[in-house]
Length: 194
Image 1 (spheres, rainbow, N blue to C red):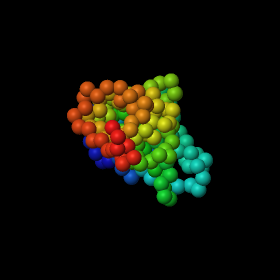
Image 2 (cartoon, rainbow, N blue to C red):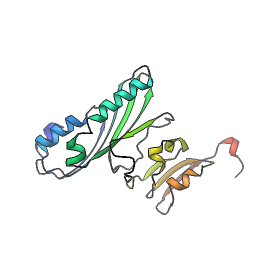
Image 3 (tube, rainbow, N blue to C red):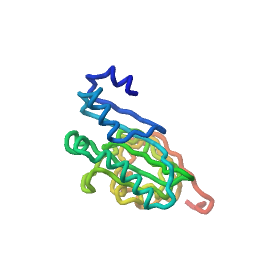
Image 4 (spheres, helix red, strand yellow):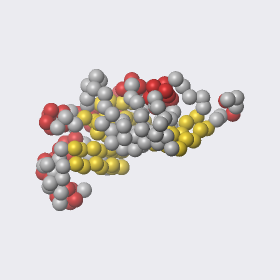
């Protein structure tokens, strides 16, 4: 990646999606300062696994340590670039998804079937960032149980899958369906009456 960035000193916008490579805020800062000095708009998403700790508090400490690299003056004051992080335990790993705000990708950024995730952000809780780029969602009520995500609205959904019955929160998260092009509905046996 550094080899590519060396060729792009005049770039002002960058959007990157990374899997299984651990990059923290200090490493990004070094690459941006050294190779992308004109960068103004930076959108990223990183999904990674860290070795899991035995107890939740230690895992949360690992996440806090990782997020602290994005809480520097370079990120917060100079660029006003904020990130949100979701994490959960999965087997022997600590699964982390960290992304820039406002969110810039078409899929909603949560792990599949992960009811026990946690969320933290580098921005204050009174700043609400947009998820307007999200176009594809497999809606599950548990996805929005975290207070940090309970207030968001996904207004540009084009492809939606869900299971009946839907909860009341669905209508606050997805207040309108005017952009919807594709809908997949699962109806479990216990909900056979419509």
